[in-house]
Amino acid sequence: MTSSNKPLNQKTLQRLLVKRFGMAVASYLAIFALVSIAHYYGLFAAAGGAVALLLAAATASQLLFFGLFLSGRNQSFRDPSLTEAQVLVALGLTTVLVAMLDQARGSLLVLYPMSMLFGLFQLRVWVFFRCACLAFVCFAGINLYEFQAGLIQDIGLAVLQTCVLALVLAWLNLFAWYMQQMRQRMRKRRFALQAHQETLRGMMRQLEDMVATDELTGLCNRRHFLRMAAQALETLTPMRQHGLALIDLDHFKHINDRYGHAAGDRVLQAFASVASECLRDGDVIARYGGEEFVLLIPDTDADAFRACCERLRVAFSECKPVNVKVSNLSLSVGMTLLSMYDNLDEALHRADQALYQAKRSGRNRSASTWELADA
Ligand SMILES: Nc1nc2c(ncn2[C@@H]2O[C@H](COP(=O)(O)OP(=O)(O)OP(=O)(O)O)[C@@H](O)[C@H]2O)c(=O)[nH]1
Image 1 (cartoon, protein in one colour):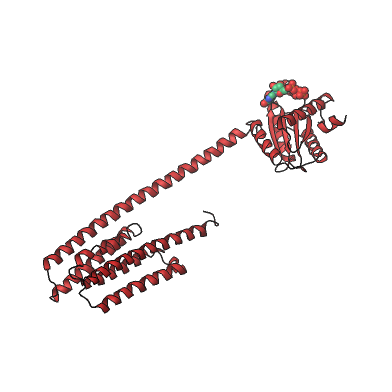
Image 2 (cartoon, rainbow, N blue to C red):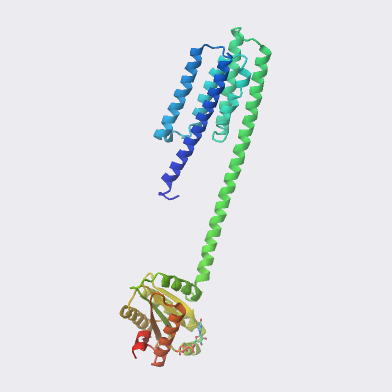
């Protein structure tokens, strides 16, 4: 992960957490509507003041969470989603609410699993189990207290409700465990997939290099050069020119015949290493075929281009190929300049004509199309 997209991800995550919190608030509003219905039909055992106090506590707790999310202080907690805290608050409020109800208690029992569902994906299995136990203890505690105080109206109903809650919470725990296992499996698969993708990308890069490189010299091959030259041609503006040269090693057949094909190969490699040393980053040299090479110098003029080709010619004449005692190494160069709207094939043809001229004039020299035009 780069340092530039790290804060962006954190921002996205925070937005997601605030959205989740929004869902929790929407649930509280829905529960408030249910409470209003229960209140309207007189299903509350508690006084109106106690109900108002419960609503105030619910509002205050949500405002507190909202403040934490808004200020970003939630990020300083181990779990910035504050899921466990939100579930515990919801369980606490549900317990107080349920304790205030009598006949409607069974209907609103569903608020316990609903609160637990909020933590289904986020809480670890053990934490989820702990919350579920707390929910059960709270509800069973209400019934026990009422039983001891002689407040319970229907013991059978209370036992049934406690058992139903225990069953639902047990199933929720099983489901949470299953979900976590599935998520872990999916995460592992994702990592494996990412590793495969990385390997494939590496192989693609290797293949691209192989397709673009001449095996003997390590220079670009003709196809790759033509692609790069076409791209370079497109970037030209009216005031700019690129230099294009065809370079041919002189009497190469003679070298092969006299010293052997392997020695000829080493001469080709020697030229490649001389060219790589002589040229700057951004210049492109490629093996055009056999003992012929092609050179592209971006953003140049006739004098600078000629100087560059001459430097290469002299450097090659002085080079010493490994294990080949060959003397009088030389090359001939045909140069042309690429202008805007130029055609690459035509430019290569011009360079070839200049090369022919250099060969005809005695080799070991460079000739240019602009000189041919002047002659
Ligand atoms: N060792 C070696 N020789 C190659 C390779 N590719 C082409 N050649 C040889 O290069 C020689 C080129 O010969 P010619 O086209 O007659 O050119 P030249 O002898 O350099 O003569 P001029 O270009 O007129 O100076 C041929 O003998 C090819 O077999 C290669 O990869 N390795």
